[in-house]
Length: 90
Image (cartoon, rainbow, N blue to C red):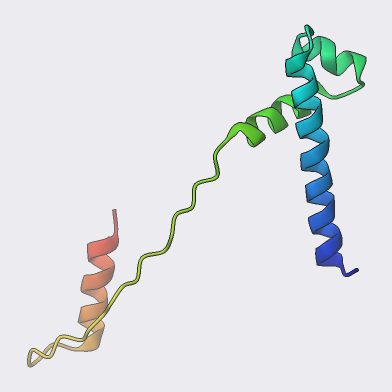
């Protein structure tokens, strides 16, 4: 197993570890602080993972962009690039 696979497995193991603890705490009558104390978990790390796992991962695809050169006489490709950059700046 190479390093990338080991890193992927470690990430998966952490995710499983925290998912299991978050589920166990939510099914218990304990507060997060009490649960963390009884299970020797850092409450800040518990909160971080609870937040991380509750977020929906949003897929934002890249949009294709077509750039064509301006064939107007006297217009160089450098000014076309400047216009494109100017147009996309916020």
